View 1 (cartoon, rainbow over the protein chains, first blue to last red):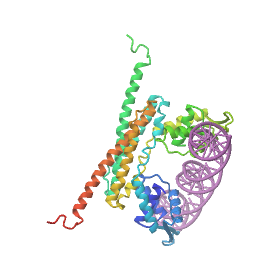
View 2 (view 1 turned 120 degrees about the vertical axis):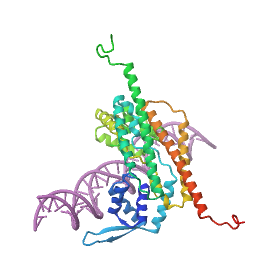
View 3 (view 1 turned 30 degrees about the vertical axis):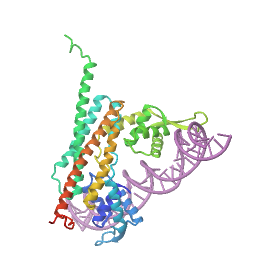
View 4 (view 1 turned 90 degrees about the vertical axis):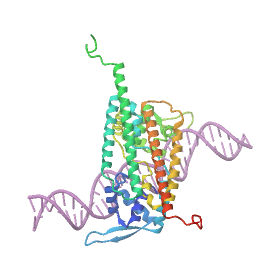
Length: 188
Length: 188
DNA sequence: CCTATTATAATCAGAATTGACTAATAAAGC
DNA sequence: GCTTTATTAGTCAATTCTGATTATAATAGG
């Protein structure tokens, strides 16, 4: 019973759907929110079913193979609200994937660390560009979520840029203190 | 082969250890970095062993029960560096746990949403207080990591505060537009 | 000195997750 | 009209993770 369950219940609350539909929606619209894999969604649907939070009925369109359509039950709606309250009032760990590497930065020569972090910054900037598209205003919550992620990405960009600058100047200082003596270049 | 593996390899690179030792260290010093459970660490150690990245030998102190002590191999060191480079140069998804609830904020009455987010803000502030202790300067990477998490928490605090203010004023507007008529209170 | 509690060290069964695969239909290309 | 590719819909075995539990030793309390 976690964030993913909340998501699936929330989608079923909006409308009854079959697994594939849910997965498509997540992939197309919510890839920024979760990296849940398709098989996981099916597993969650099964669990919800067993717990009585959703109900299944099979459906067939034309002569296409049958599909399992899931609908949320009353108990499911209650569960959704409970999970929602918990999730909203809890501040999870504030760890963006990638802090582990940062912790071991010292194991790499500074110059290589700089390269790596530069690559990371570039990725952050690519992700930021996606926010330049006009944001379709869908509802209070969804907009807040987008705004939240945009804010965090920006903070990350600013920080990474500053860190890179610091490390770069440290790198230059190192070069001056322990200069590589190129024949005759500094002498005269 | 992920962040957790990088962590375990990194700890073994510093010194050979047994599982319990690793878990203690993580719990005491790195609880902010990961919420990996103890059994997971043992599982990772086993996998690393099977892959030839670490080597085991049993040890017995006094008449205490034997312990399995793990040491990193050459192959393990290489793997560590490879994982480190990947981790450092990749910007993972920027989702702090809790965005899912935010997305469904609309399903709660505004007043309750305010309560929940206020609770969340309080937790962020508690987490922030932990950073007021003088930070023991251990190494470039570790310090950067702490600084990073501090920065993100602060950004979160600022944002949450602003959001709460906006929602509060929206809430007040709502009350004015659709006021609850208390007998005679406004009439005269 | 005996008992209760805490610390040490780890295992294991069960739950959650995911990569790889299946299988049918529809659409596109020639 | 026939073959190839893409889309739809999902299953399953293998991997990964974790809560519960075990077992011994040390320490504290009375």
